[in-house]
Image 1 (cartoon, rainbow, N blue to C red):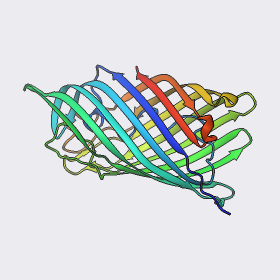
Image 2 (image 1 turned 90 degrees about the vertical axis):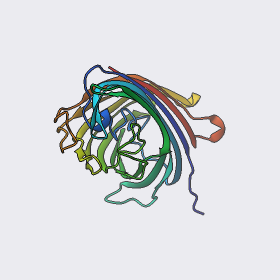
Image 3 (image 1 turned 135 degrees about the horizontal axis):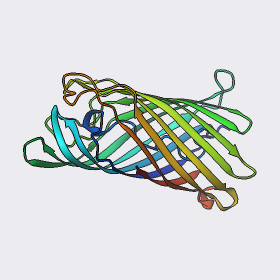
Image 4 (image 1 turned 180 degrees about the horizontal axis):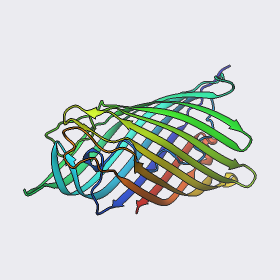
Length: 289
């Protein structure tokens, strides 16, 4: 008798950024959410069947200047909460020489609060809670001894609320394509794990503003210690982000400058004993330096 395994996953990630320089990409933000692509045993293949996931991402930060709605804004202060709800299915039958295939889809509800000034004008503040941009993904998992691999392709679909005349937008109004390769070394006897996920984000043009954010390179990493008998793990997680091509289009009035950032912080995992390992709760906090 075939059974589908249902796993509830809750990931709460909080990031604080304090960068005085101007930030590249439209609105000084990106589809890439720092540190979210690597958690615990990220490249270890899940059990075949369904997985239900709820992921909450919390962000607050500042930027000296950026372009929003075709205008230069200065002294930006932003905070955002995105709650992604969705799931995935991992096929039991291997593909492509023994690899496990997983397909997934997620849709967020987002809250954005943004305060900024138009250059040489007064300030403005705007808050919005709306449906955000959906994500669909496909991943291949395989293993060689203690080494685990995950090749992942995620597509960001511009389904979210967006208006050029709004200061705060939950959606971004363009497509994004994120390709990444996760590697996890996991020693089950000692409980130590090292994971790293390099990836490249390709962005299309925002047709409402004629702004094309540059393409982005990012690396997430994690060093974790698992205490399997006690059903929890602790880790040190971080990320490095570098924009590899400049912004372009008539809307990129600040020019083709590039963004760069680095962050690190603690993380914890808990698998409640009553759920027999099929419920996983994770939390992390990363500070952008």
